[in-house]
Image (cartoon, rainbow, N blue to C red):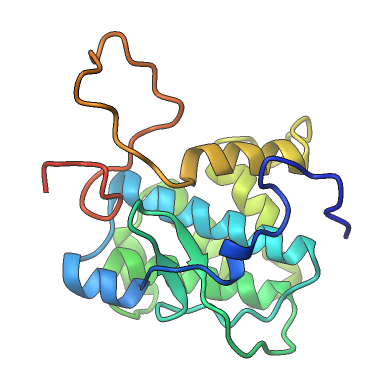
Length: 201
């Protein structure tokens, strides 16, 4: 699949695959499990990065808590490393395990799915189906995480990734002088310590 002609950071970017940041495992060990909006933003950011890689023919990512990197503004990328010959459905399964780790604080099994919000839990369960062909694709993950119906096809891949980039990309806090009633958010603020956009933790 060809990504030529994309703009606005929608094609494979160096920071997707050669990103900088702390391993997710270290972030969770230091700050605790993800929850709420920060968990959703992590899920969307990593799914969008995985989708861009798949669209350029890169799969077998061997995703795990040690090679998913979290930047200082909550942005995510994947560390470079040896790839396997597995197909994209294996990446989707590993993505689901990464999200469960982030929510539970450790690698777990089905019992840890209770720590996920219901919509995200259902998506993770689909990604863990034994039949690889029954799992969603990475771009379908992005579509659902953005709140689009899985059956809705009006949004193109380009539009979906642009929306994901706006929502889950590096977040800079609103300027102190901005009045809340006059400030229009482009995307929801990342909640809590993991998004590093909240001063309450």
